[in-house]
Amino acid sequence: MGTYVYGIIRASHSPVRQEIGGIGDPPRPVRVLRQGELAAIVSDAPEELRPKRRDLLAHQRVLDEAGAEGVVLPMRFGSTAPDDATVTTVLAERAEHFLEQLRALEGTAEYNIKANHNEEAVLRLVTADNDDIRSQAEANREADGGTQEQRIRLGEMIAAAVQAREATDAELLRQSLEPMAEAVSAGPQSTGWLANLSFLMDRGAAERFLTAVDELRQEHPHLELRVNGPLPPYSFVDTPSPQQAEGGTAEAFGASAAQPTNG
Image (cartoon, rainbow, N blue to C red; front, side, top):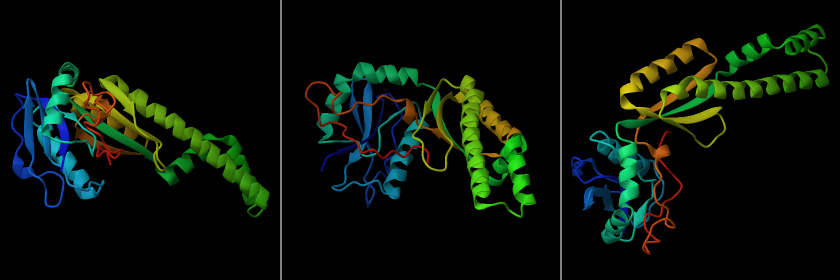
């Protein structure tokens, strides 16, 4: 059946409630495996595990519960080991590494920000800021819409200006918020987002950080900012790959690519 691993905590961490339920249908009971100063939050692994929304949310729910009681090193969704003994072996072999990370991440949380443009607002902005676009648009209007070539030219000019603005706004977002963070991690780019940034925040500075995000919204109304947090520090944890595990535990903690971090 195998053992599913949600995250790693200190052995002194408050117990995780079994009734929150883990992955699977029905949800597998959550339990804790202790090894020295460390412990792993685990459950039995389903025979077939795919990144379904139900299980992604269950994975994150368990980590949120654990994170409310202290620092947790989150594993990626799909992290499994052949059995409980393999998990405790990895904890023993990697103890120094895990304890170092737990100390470094004490009192922190991850906040993910995805940024997008309000299409109408950014079109108004780039038109107002670009003399060439305004001139071409005016020439097209005077020519009763312009020729197809002129319309294509205007579209290309607007697209280039919007693309340049995306790069500018992504840098603005990072420069404005990075000084408040312990660390910043850029997530994978995807269609529709001009920036996907995760900030490792001291929990005591989170309110000031969120206030700064609101101020950015007010100062730059063409920006749409989506904030997700506090989260376990997914983007700032160096969890072991199968190749990194020492002592012959090569198959330990194999993980799928899916990760329930920030929507």
